[in-house]
Length: 166
Image (cartoon, rainbow, N blue to C red; front, side):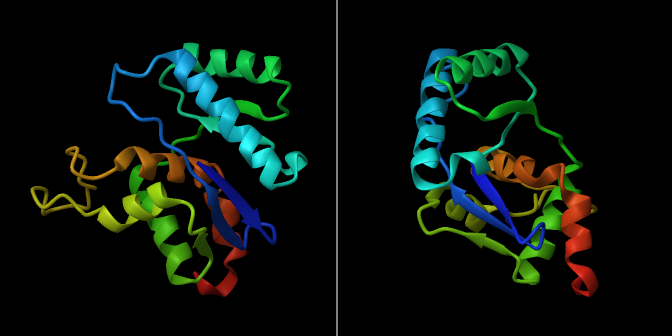
């Protein structure tokens, strides 16, 4: 997932996405490293490499994150791999919804995984007393999480940049 902040934090744009085929336990670290290096190099060809500063990695597996750091160094990529910040799920959903309503969220047409994931997310009907996103394998929640982790650390500046629209 690659997102960009435009005009400071006034807009959030999904500029690229990629999903590695395979289920849990089917994808090894080397496959992840290779796919990530290819993804970043593709971004470097399409955009100014100096603008691609961070990759927010899901911090569930530090060994994979450390491997990504080594792989990036070997490939001479300038992107810094850092642990993502996981704001509470409903705070992330609320921020994304606010950005959408305010016309501050954009997705490039080539980002089919994001478009698909956003179109199929629903609240869990089995939990009527609170908002809980359905996560039973019928929706692409991995892509939703990746999107949300890409901006989660910046919820406050995104909120402030909205001014009176919030």
